[in-house]
Image (tube, rainbow, N blue to C red; front, top):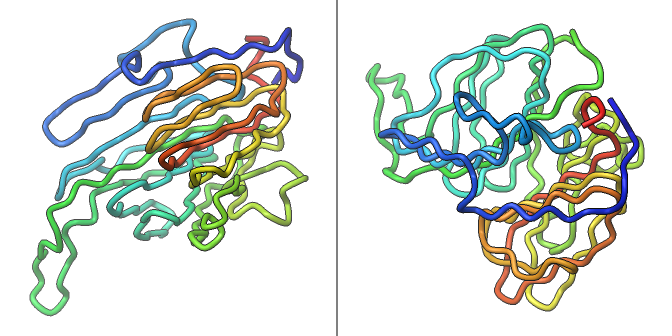
Length: 262
């Protein structure tokens, strides 16, 4: 990993410019190259390789599939998502619950809309609701390959009431006492803010930042208005202010390295 940058830049990526995958049960928008969507100059920013904005219909989802040597963070915006993996971990992810899966040497997992639950008494699946689940899944390259696969989740909904930036996942030492969950990347930290009108949020000062407006609308100093789904890739220094007139949920990746020399 490379920890140097050139002059500061603010690269705005609008929601309509994202790659899109639409099939019957999935509406997915990709900030970076993903699957068959490939652009050699859009593969990552800092150490963030995937920022997928997914909506999954009831009763559907991603069947069991493999991952290796990747830190995977899932953040639910609306609805609930069931996770199961080959290490025996399972759980329901919902808004305000931070979840991390370390793929390490190799892991199998599935993720599905939590609209159906198994009824042990009858031996059947019963539908609980008919709502889609909306979530953002982010992949970060670990600084160390070949670790033992792992899973962690923790409720941080109360902390988000402050309206400020809340550390959600981090491998950086400065957030060792604050982040909700740990990731195997000592150069990266993910923050979330449920922004309130009239309450500015200051971005961390780091060589690489990725600012994603997950819900609502915000404005960034030096850029201007940002709509839902817009992102800004900042290189060379942060510290800018975010504001909102109506409320917004913003995901900020603070990174002190990038992949290779790109």
